[in-house]
Every structure is written in structure tokens, then in C-alpha cells.
Image 1: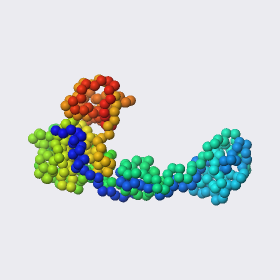
Image 2: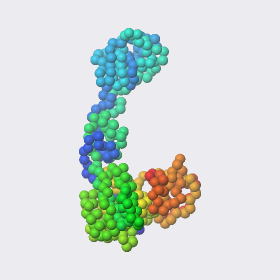
Image 3: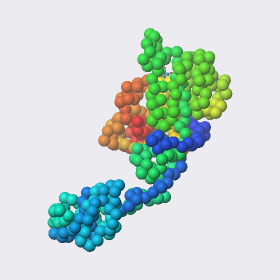
Image 4: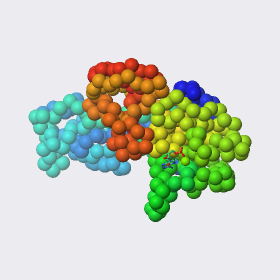
Length: 390
Ligand code: AMP
Ligand code: MG
């Protein structure tokens, strides 16, 4: 058995960044930027008013002073001429500050009579002018690689970038295996259960920015598994679920090997998730996850997600670990690295009392995977432990 970090090294050796493609900005959210995006304009492109009020010369703004209103500047419609001594221009938010003016007196600080304003006693020093290029300038960049957030997309739009180069989304084929499985919504026979991992992993892959495809459930026969692998063609990553341990009906490794899979490892010293397997299979990479629902999801977070991130060009990194303090004392751990379902609240972490790898309700309730190293000794309340966010 190899360690989790060794397994990750093997997995990272199997995958590499995919090619890039260009997508319109409206499709760019959640995608991974593959080439720096460079601003094509200054923002704002001119000194702009941040408030509704009157644009004037700062040295003329004194309580009690009067100015003559000579015109108007609105967003999208600037005032053509300069503002001279004793003059001001009615201005609205987003309008260009006219030549000669460098200050906006907000309308609340002014009394207007006809074309004359009188400045009130509370007009402050704030100019309410957004300088040209104060947000970004031509040539400023959003650097790749970067998963594009909603904010990023808004920024790119403001930079006048209508399309961006992003990594292609990895195509992932998800194969559940087992005679006992039926799809959600079907009527299970007396000995059957519902395939759940497939849907959990599909959601995880969607959120990672992959393009997952759920294949029909493969039965525990060679022929059925071969059909499933055949249907998986074209995928960058084939993820099988179940059938990977040493039971009589665990055929995934055998069948895949028969189809040319070069296995790079089998079995990892972790809990849950020991029967994990991976290898190259033609153009694709095969990741064989354990069938137990919690094992499959934990291995999804610990192994599958980092592989997808490599393919997206985000680099080879294990799942981000954070630290929290134990809410209670805990006894000694076991010989394998343990990913415990845990609840994190106010910086304190509590492992769930039931850690059976079949309990999806416990996993769904947890919001963290607390990581105990192999052979970890007893730990006391308040000690720092590592965890992964769920
Ligand atoms: P296996 O590795 O095939 O022996 O499966 C281990 C356990 O996980 C068994 O109890 C299976 O019924 C269960 N299992 C396997 N695949 C799935 C799946 N896609 N959804 C839910 N349970 C599964
Ligand atoms: Mg099975």
C-alpha cells in the first residue's frame, strides 16, 4: 500500500493540462483562464463624477460662495465647454467632469435659485471625482491561470474583453458498477439500492468545471463492464465506482487490464478509500474509486478533484488543508491516514461520532474532513488538526 501523497504523485504523473479554447465572456464564469487577459481601455476613461451635484473649481468652493450654473453633464452626455471662474455645471453620477472643474459639490450641500447656487456650510473637502484610470489602465492584466469568478467576469467586461482563452473542460465518464444498483427514480428490487455516488461525483465534477457524463450502470460481468468502457470512449478521465476490491464480483481491475489499462497503483493507506486504483487506458486515464458512498466521495475530494485541477491548468496541488482546534479530546488513531467526517463551527472541529464509510447522511451533515496522520497518537481538546473544507 502507498500513502495518499504517493498516490497523488502517481495521479499527477498520469494527467496533464488540456488544450485551450476561446469562449465568449457570457460563457466564461467558472472556466479557468488560460492566457492573461489584458485591459483594452482605461477605466474610467475620463475623470468622472461619483455623485449628483455641481462641478466647479475647488478653490472656489467655500461656504456661502455663489456660482452660476452654465450647463449640464450627465452620464453618456458630457458638457462641451470649460468651466470658468464663478461658474459651475450641473453634473450627475458617471458624467465626465468638465474641463476646468476638479470638484463636485454634492447637491445636498447647495441651495439653487434659478441659475445660481449658494454653497452651504457643510460642503467638505472630498472632491467626489473618480480619476481617469483609477480602476484600471490599458495593459493591466488578469493573470492566468485563474478560475473566473462572477467578479472577474464583470472586470473582464469592463476591460472590453468580449472573449477569453480558457482551458478545455475535461470530459469525464462516470461508471457505477454493481448488480445491486438502480438509478434514482427507478423501483429497486428487494436486494437493490440506489446508485448515489455517481450523482455526488457528477455534482463535484460540475462544480470543478469538468464535463461529466453518467454512463449506464455496469453489472458485475465482464461483458457489461466492457460495454461500459466502450461507451466511455472520448473521455479524458474514466471514473469507475465500486468493483475495485478483492471480492469475487470485483472485476473492474481485471477487465480494465484486459482492455490495456497500465495500472500505476492499487490500494492506498487511507481511511476510507483503501481500494483505489489508477492507470493509463489508451488516451484516457482510469481512476477506480471504491464503491462505499463515503469512500467514493472522500476519494473524489482527495484524488479526483486535484486531477481535474491539473487538467484545467491550475497546477498539481493536493486538496487545500486548513487547521482548526479540536473541540474534544480524541483517542489514538489507526495505522492509515484517516479522513474523518467532522463538523467545524467557530474554529472548533468535532469528528462525527459515526465514521462508517457507508453513511451518506453523516457525510452530508459534515462540513469538513478532519485529517489524522497514520499512527496519530491521542489528541487533546484545543490541539490543532488539519482539515479539508467540504
Ligand atoms: P464494491 O466496491 O463494488 O464492493 O462496493 C462497495 C459498497 O459500495 C457496496 O455496498 C456497494 O453496494 C456500494 N456501492 C457501490 N457502488 C455504489 C454506487 N454507485 N452508489 C451507491 N453505493 C454503491
Ligand atoms: Mg460492487
